Image (cartoon, rainbow over all chains, first blue to last red; front, side, top):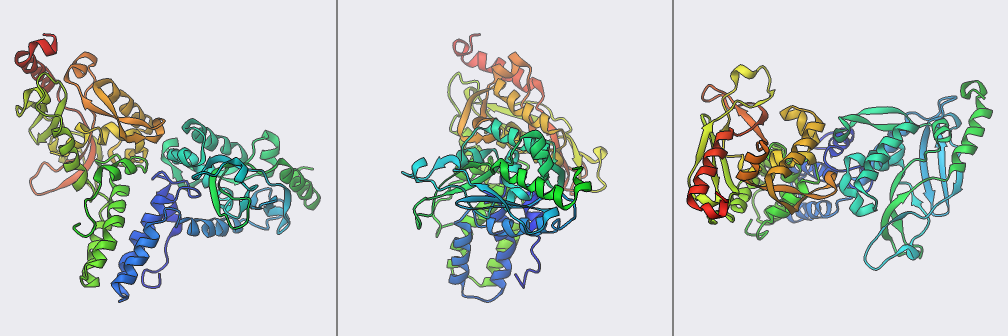
Length: 258
Length: 258
């Protein structure tokens, strides 16, 4: 990375959305572009060829590798909008296997929580719904940043991994425009005539429309140590948004119109 | 390649169609998958790191690299259907800058030709329509194999390279089903609910419907030595199909119903 110079993750994410990835459960093109960009520099470092080959096999062998970079990119993006008085935009969504929590710009570090749901999806090998733990992990930062479930229209093949139909994937992205404040031109979705990905979940729009953010996610096993048992679709509980709005109204009544 | 073993080009093409490539003017994902698969083996060969880095930069620096493998794969695929008595399926389309020619299964090596049109498209740098040569090259073997213009629905971003709109790209693939005899399950298009790419142009269907095969193509400069000046959309002349049907009817009247 030092030899290459800064890696423009935002540019890679922009490209991957035109290549069938949504940046949460499909990161195949992103992983390949990252490998393409870094590998020549790794080769120039004078390391033993066998070590470089092992790195190339490791990264190339895991289509999800680039998720490790999409998530922090999403965190940096959403944090840039954190702490703005009166802002009703969601800056984080995360789950710990029991609770689902959101943070909102106008209320800083406060978490608004509700019970985590069990994702509905497809299961690996012999696993089934009985093996699934309620929603867990911090990867929903991708949806918070307009990726994952919000960008599913650009990744129709993902329905073979998380379930649902291709028309559901298109409809989901279109619905997310109803609850977001902006379209991100850097994350254009060619299939929607290059419309920018729906970005910036607005607590008030969620409550007015009743449309919940759509999250694509891995499904963890309910027995500790099992690891991933599948992947599917899940939503936050509505009460996160209700309690967030109450707190926003209390913190800045004029801004919320309360 | 010897260290890797045979490269399954058909499998890579199948994947790239789910990653925004149509295999003629977009080969970005295909190029990256080819590089990912071969590079570890190249590293194991004991060549100087600087040479391997140069290979990685060369392949990684040209998003069209994989076209060099899609074209022969298309040729092998279509040739497998050549020389079948009475068959009205097109086995080759090619252009030499003056004439456009097709070969048909039931008539062997005979070319049926008409005047090559000038592609309508987008131009590089300062080039414009006056710099364009009539259609030239053998890359339309990709369309003959159900790729390129036939698979445009899976590559909506290509309209920024060849012109037209995203809805045109979807409509084009749907129209190509009207003139083809099969849908290739190995080349599934996720956006069309994983329908197989339209494959096997039938001379009789072209003439019954009046729908001409759609080709995405590079545009060559009309002055020799200029190279590529743009990329666009072009069709074969109808008369290729008229004269082909006459010859098919003469060769196997019972099979053609003539």
